[in-house]
Image 1 (cartoon, helix red, strand yellow):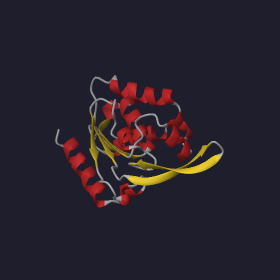
Image 2 (image 1 turned 120 degrees about the vertical axis):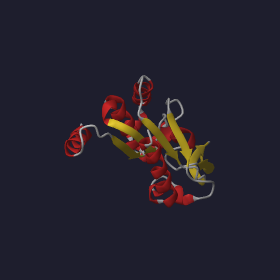
Image 3 (image 1 turned 135 degrees about the vertical axis):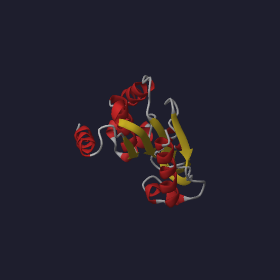
Image 4 (image 1 turned 90 degrees about the vertical axis):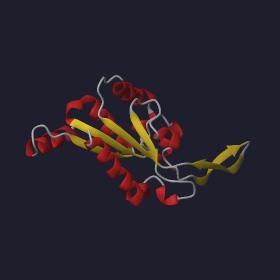
Length: 174
């Protein structure tokens, strides 16, 4: 695992007792949870942005991310996290930017454009809120109609930056 080597190198440069704060977007948030679960002694905190914490075969199929299409892997990551006795402080930032889309639906030989609403075109708000994961505090960071907070764009938003800083302050205050 490359990230282990990078973090070990950083820990060599910085003081021995220094711990890191992991920040991950989308699938990177799951990588952070898995890393923090395996190396709790190296991690002070975890912040995820628009992370698909729960199984979403339809949306993951659209995004082409086959690794997230297997519910057993998602359950394994969640269970590994939940079994930790001592967890790093963790936060999930989720987009509530409800965006109306249409998806093509075939019914009786006819093509229809079926309207749907997603909080994020790739990660539903309910999944990004880390439900089922113990001790991950979730924040909704966008509001209905604000399409600037769609999946990739939300990491570039000023309010996201401020919420990340607030999470870091909470992690460091302990």
